[in-house]
Image (cartoon, rainbow, N blue to C red):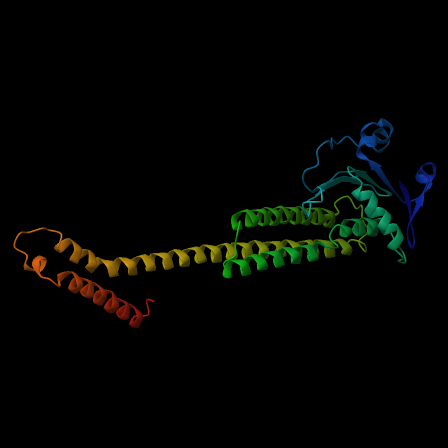
Length: 303
């Protein structure tokens, strides 16, 4: 797909007229780029982009080269990636899975600004990948809050599995935003003057927004750790309750065990053994011991 940059936005054009435009945008599938030596020779691009697993931006004498790997936001979504070459008059996007193509097509329909430029397109394009991220992070926060409520209500089943998945997702997006911040900083340096000084301000906004998103993910990571501590505290409280019950039962039956052991010694001269009412008396003493113990525990608020 080929686009020309006009004053009010970008417009779809044919391939044959692409190089006739003063400023243009080209989106090529990664496979087509790799099999087309004409494009590589024409733009003197030698980078090997077979694997794109992280975000970066590098500045060279004639162009800027970058790769962006967008993490999946859910089980049904897949990780997306693309490469971008920025020249003075052209932007070439090497699309791996069609996401970059969709974003550019959406920008072409929505942009209606005066004095539109190639620099503004790059900003809009990079910004488009962050449009729903704040809502996405809010959903993660809500999911953590629901897990916390389940813990307090005693319904935290498979807690470790769910929390591990959330923590891995948060860590992945934290690294993603940190790498995007590096991309914004590299563009802001503008070492080779690819961007006009008036247009460079947009990338300061981009860097600030990515930094805020990275800060949000850091807060989510801390919140997840706090919820995990709450879970551990609840486990300890339940263990303490169990130990308290076991201690109370042991304390009640300890004197009874003493009575049973005392009269189980089978000495010959034990007058209580021959007493007619010895058995019911021992039963009464045992019940009295249990009753007194329960009263004491209740007064001490152990029950």
